[in-house]
Image (cartoon, rainbow, N blue to C red):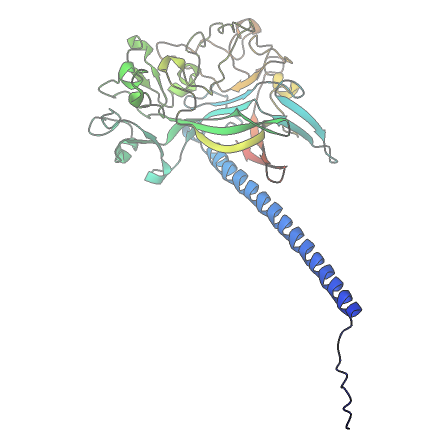
Length: 424
């Protein structure tokens, strides 16, 4: 009988298989962790990029507005002789800050290792005129108006050297001049207990020549509250009731009108032309309108035609650089308040709001701002102007403005901040 020897083939033992399986699982765990870490990093980078893109978009618009002309003849707020002939003849520039650092809606957060202070401000506002340079169609700002508006051809007679040339789009009025406002409004959301806000941009177009607008637009026709479709016909225009015609018609502002606070959108129409300011019924002190809301006389709802620039805003902080100063400061700083001359509406070193306003020296036949003198004694300084220091005889010069924006990202639970400086 023949015996056949069995062949021994090479193979893994059970122990070797278990070791190999453990190594595979260990490598897979490492790769899984690496992929997870990579995905988390990518997610954070994408969120950071998205926040940066949102901030870049908003700051680009703001810088474009701030870099534009704000007054007549390319006059700049930083000019050495800006106040030589008094306030500007056309246009204005206005800053509003509701509370000093460390109180109210302005939180001082300390300084970094370089000694640079950090603030979280939510009651700062900008309000100023924009005058676009250039005479091409794309250089103009646009506003929606009704098709039968006297601002549009063939009704318009003489709107100015260039406005008449570019009134060629149905329901659209075009102008190089507008008043622009930037302001915050609180939302129901919060960032781990810190309130969040939305940043709005509002613009109202001005008419360069408003002497021949015919037929006149009646207030009832333009802002008839019971008729919602007609309630927003001129929301994008800088206009107010015409005092010279018993408020029956709408008065469209020109750039010269806008140097006068009474004509600007959202301003209180009473006692702002050299007379005592209206008294706040709650605080029992002289008040000044916040300007962010529309004039109630025109029955305009809040935020109508306002553009939403940013959501989830944590802070909107505005600071100025004065001639002779090294640092940017807010309006509560003693360097700025030296020019207030103890204005009764905005007392020096007070905790209430502070305002810088280029004001006006015009007299339009209804409101007279020419009676106010920046070099007079404090007894006559009952209105807003804050640009002359009686003690030193110096005029306030703002060289540049610094704006800091901080927004929140709910996905990464992080904030991102950007700061830019624009020469004025």
